[in-house]
Image (cartoon, rainbow, N blue to C red):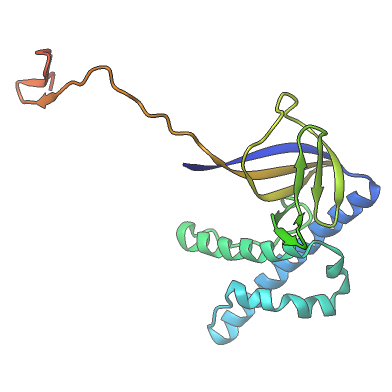
Length: 213
């Protein structure tokens, strides 16, 4: 059986990496707010809904208009659009309409794991080294982490990584897909149960449990 488990680490970026994280946080917030505005405008004027894949197609044009968007992780921008789509799905269920984000909102962005093989070389955009306490992330490259001191190995497949900022501290949460071993339980005894009116339960061993009504 597959389960999903997240491992959160304290992140120690240098000054250049901090600037890039802050820029990515601002860029994802900009994309979220821009797409939310466009969706509202389209519905107000034409009673039409803009789907998330339509928003994804607009990203190249936005990057041309705002070149600083090309400096950050492109996957983070895409996942922000999917987050907005999920926010509207939740709105239909919970009636909580998506809100515009400001710099005081939750500061985090998510990037998905990508693995490619080219000329027999394996490329991974997210790599976690639990032994040496380092992590490699898109655009940010290698950084020191702290956490899970007694953990020597994490078995499973990386799904994504979420980078967050809390006051002046940085964190990364890595989501893994892991195999959960299902143990076969061999019963030592088997009991039959009969439900009644006078006696609530009568077992095959002759035990009776009174119906206290």
